[in-house]
Length: 193
Image (cartoon, rainbow, N blue to C red):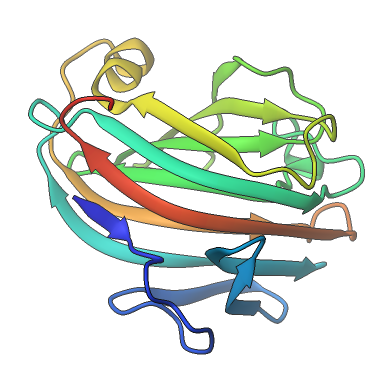
């Protein structure tokens, strides 16, 4: 089930079914081509915004979330483990029907593999998973795949309910810096191919 379909993009408009949400500052988002890959381009200048889409996915049947992303600029000093530096160039958040969220992030400082609760919003639980860290692979397309059902069980200690939404996010307002990233196709799959 392809959620962000980049096939056939010629540039211009935001993908169908996705909605921009602004938390702070001015969003800079466009559809573009990069190295022959159709993609979504996000640029944050001391801002925080996202693109959101409602979905209905049973993680017991389609547990794998796959995507490609590239970070061109990390927010200087960003580290999700402190509220004052909680900025990332690229985040992919999965929202479940029980108001719990898993956030897959490319962090500036936090080590790859870290999984930690980050929720400061009442009645909403968010656990972040660092998929990539630092600038070692900056300006390179990275393909990711995560077993969302297994990550949910590890984070919350119970089977995952249905997925109700996805959010692609970028922010640099806490550090007052600049962040830039690109996203390619995002999909839920029953198996890894």
